[in-house]
Length: 322
Length: 307
Image (cartoon, rainbow over all chains, first blue to last red; front, side, top):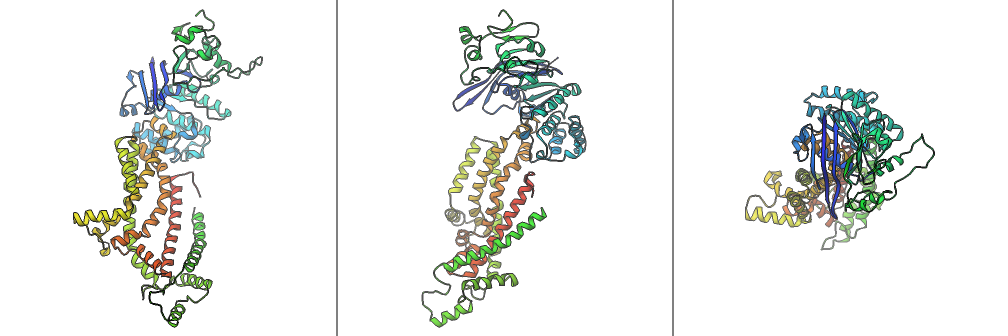
């Protein structure tokens, strides 16, 4: 069952020096209980897609296209109606747990206000439920620690709190925007494991936004690779990892350090990420692509379905005839 | 925390002592004396007067006597200018007046300033925002010695709604114009501070989290953004409050309210040393007390601050 269907999403910003096109015609589909990864470098538009889904785009942003969530069009939905979807149906956790919690409020208050508002619970009921979720996120001594302030928690613990807070209303979709980027490497694994548990325990679909293709494997079913605000490739994680079709996906995967191979040096992708001010006519990756020819610079490659479930936008896909 | 308050109060004693010594020395160094009049007094009379008030003693003896009488008897000495009145009498007479209109002006400035600032921040770049910023800047560049006559012109001479001066024991019609004249420019700076502080607070990451939680805007503003908004404003309010309750010369002179500000200026002009000293010490002590209160308020607003 399709839970979220994004069609031809465009997000642009009016700025002092012109329009910035952050997201350009993105399609995305999440089934109930599914975990998908949205992968791309910074500036690829991945966070803006998520903010568009949450209705939290900046004031100077304009979005077009369609975002259907369980039969409801979210694009252009009013604040009041959106506040009945946020936290209840779709929850989001953000990149930096050090700043995402309100430093002036106790954890208990920040968590219970969600339940008293959306579920009409009493303070006592809400507190019990909040403790239960902190326990589920393996926050030690949750019953006593819940009365503390955010600064009394470490970064990893704060991210657990934020995940627990996001799950309070048992949403059907959890958006995790780079949830481990700001954390120590030692804590990353724990947070990813907890996010993995979320799917099985709470039956929540997950969109994992990341620039690190390395954490996608083993945690997600599908992956979507973004570049220049466009989808380059999408498909099941295992197959995409085994045989990427798009040269950009290849580059991303090559840039991930692998311990099981020591024959080659880590490779980067030459060149800089695209400036979003002037969208090229052709493929956004053409400037940095080793396979690009004249056509790539002038004609935007159409999306082509390859093997079942796989999709790529490239004139010269890898491992295919094109 | 109790330890912190005790330590701050202990530090206040040497601070006040330094304040006394510095003010006394400055006063002593200023040319002229309390008994210099247009008609020169006979030398014998002058010597007698000087002797009577201990002004013939060396400077450090004078300061020593002054401090001792404050500490042992809470006696701030006699007024030179107002015969038969002590400094305590002068303060007892003038301070309640200043405290009344000062505290009201403070209340008005804070309530309207903060509300205006929040409203402007929430309607950022709207007509209301520009209007309130415009009014604030206007109010701030309008000095109270201009505002006070304009107010009297309109409300006393033209409309004849309110008295243009006097105090009448603080009967309310007499309080209104001084309060407006005193509070306006403070209201303006509080509004502008609140506005920029609220705008900054609303840009914080944790506000985005609050919005992602589906909280209504009113709750986000008052439960999540208000505390960080008030932090810089509160640090401004401490000294401002002291400034307002220890008197405004302009208000006292223009509205003839008989507040402490008027006494302060008169005593400075007439070299009424004990009155100058008394009011200076009062303002100093209040400043120390309210700075401490601001610091305690800070700890209450921001849980990361602990003493």
